[in-house]
Length: 127
Length: 360
Image (tube, rainbow over all chains, first blue to last red; front, side):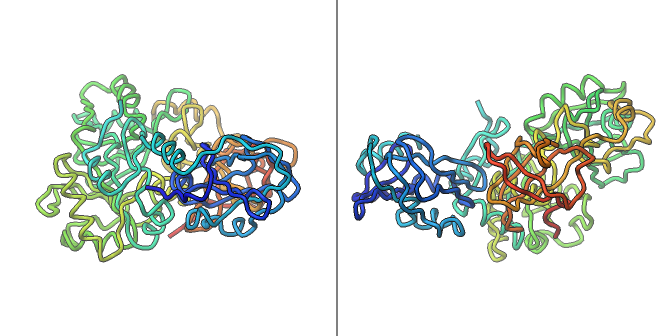
C-alpha cells in the first residue's frame, strides 16, 4: 500500500501539491512512482515557463513506460528541481521530498483532493 | 480472456505485478523492480516463467523435409540434441515468426514459437506440411522456466550432476532428473547471458520453480518478469517479433542472415528474398547522445531527411545508457554517423553504433 501524507493535497492524476513561502510546490505521488517502476529519465520545464491546470509540464520515464505529469495549478515556473535530472531515481526513493517544480503567480487551482479522497482514487485504480 | 500459466499463483505470492501479455497473465516485474532484476541476470542469476511460449512437435519420416520447406534455416546436417534458430517467412519474404528448433531424432523435432504467434504459426505450418509429417501443438502440456545469469550453472549443479547438463550453447539434454522431476535442459536464452531454458510438464512447474528458487538463493537469484526480459534482450540486440521483424520486414533486413540459407534448394519466401537482393534498409543500433529515451516506432533523421524508424528502445541498465534499434536506409547505416530521433516531437541526437550494445 502506498503512503499518502495528510498535510499535502492531491490531483486525481497523481500529483501532490503544497504551499511553501507563497509558492505551489508540485511532485509525483508514491502511488504514481510505484506504478511507473524504476524511473530513469525526467524532462522538466525551465524557470519562467507557463504551466496550465490539467496540462502536462514534464515527462517521466521508467524503463518500460512514459508518463506525463499534469499541473494542478496555472502559473509560472519559479524553480525546478535540477537534482532530478541527474538522479531521477530520487522520485522512486523519496516521492514526497523529490519535488519537481515550484510555481509562482498562481492564477487558477484545479480540483484537489485530501489524503483520504486520494487514497480512494488509488484504490479504485488498483482494483 | 487471458490464460494463466501453471505458475500464476506463485507469481502473485512472489508479489509480481501481473499484466496481460500475448494472451497470458504474466508478471511484468516483481518487488525488486526491472533494474535490479536486469542486473541480477547480468551479475548473478534470474528465474523467468516462460511457459507462455508455444511448442509445436513435428514427427514422421518427412519431418526434416517439412521443416526445410517451412523455415529459412537448414536442418539437414543437424545432430540430435542440437538447437537451431530460424525464421519462418511468408511467400513475400516477410517474417511470420522467429523460433528455435530442437532435434530429438531423425523423425522428431520440436519448434518453440512466440506465444502471440502460436495459433497463426500452427495454421501456417499445418497448411504446408509435406505428406508423411504430423504437426501437433503441444503448448498446453509444456511448462518452461528460464534460469539465466553467470551463476546459472552453479545453481543447476546443486541439483543435477555436471555431466547431465548441456555443455555447449544451443544444445539440449532430455530426460534429466531435477529433484524427481523429468526435464529437458537447454543451453539457450533470451538475455545475452549464460543460462538455461528448462522444459517440464505443467504439473511440475510450481515444484521446479521452488526448487530453483531455493537452490539459487545463496547465489543471489531473484525472480524476473517481462520487463527485465525485454531490457535484457534489447541490450543484447536480440530481435523481438512485432518490433525488429514482422510480416512486412524480411529476415535479411532484420540482420538475421545467419538463420537464412539461400543455398537451400527451396523454402517458402526464398524466391522473394533472392529477387529482392541486397536489402535497402537494415537494422542498426542507436545510443542516445542527447537527453531522452527513444521508444519503438519513432522516426530517425539524418539532417532533415528521414532515414528510418526505431523498432525498440529503452534505458538499458547494464550499459547505463538509453539505446534503441532501428530500421534505416542501408546507405546511411554505417556506425559512427550522428542522427536524430523524433521523440514525441522533439529531436534528440543519437549515434549509430555496432550491435550488440552488451556482450558478456
